[in-house]
Length: 319
Image 1 (cartoon, helix red, strand yellow):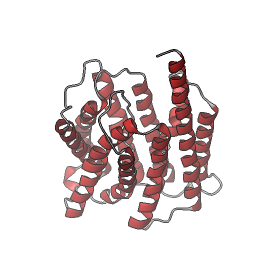
Image 2 (cartoon, one colour):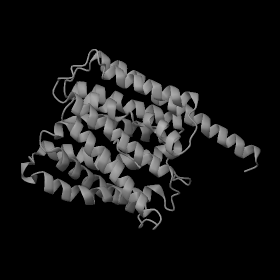
Image 3 (spheres, helix red, strand yellow):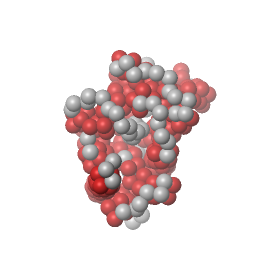
Image 4 (cartoon, one colour):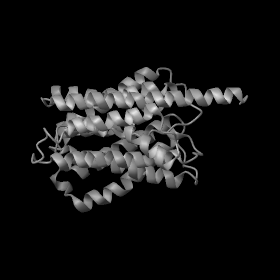
């Protein structure tokens, strides 16, 4: 998650021809970014790392918006939500995931970070009055079962260093991301989403910079060539270019495909962590991932049914 890109939708879209290429690019990049982040933390403390990443992501998004001719100051009505979502989904989510990753394998962190789509279901039912359909309830149940498989009370070594801390921080990150999404769904946007994202990222940077400089020592960063490549990938590509690509994919692909892409990110994260970091995922990690992936797909199917039902009602009413 990046997971960290906000899932914001809007009506009018750009001529993004190849949604599947965009979604493949984001799934691969965000998945690979988990072992990249893990390696980056050997050169920088977590809050400074997150800050540098967000600065590069922000500059990249401003450049993309400028090149596309859509860079403009947000509408006054959008400003509070742009700021709050930037704090929740960019600063909050990414910071907590980065801190959590210090304590656990990158592959497991990828699985936990991408449980967010499942928590949206109960949150939307509770705060937005959305129906808790059978598929949505099934998706949530599978997601919880997946978490239980990873943190199986009978097999997990609760005394292992950082097991509870790391897992707790990343699960908390997904809750923060979900809060941001619920906030977004309540708001009627006046501006175009892609033109708002640079400002959203900027709002996170404005808070991260003073916090990082106050709480961590910038002199401890090891400015080696490997770190420069690392932070460029995590910042400019994963937190900038991928965000724009995800908006394009959302506009051109159905909800089920986007749900599959959400399940693909932790799969790539697991595989790339095994290849790059030589991590060996446990059987419970793999089983948990499969359950969570099925849960995400079930939620995607529920969204698809909801969209079809809404279109059918609109057609019957002559809208």
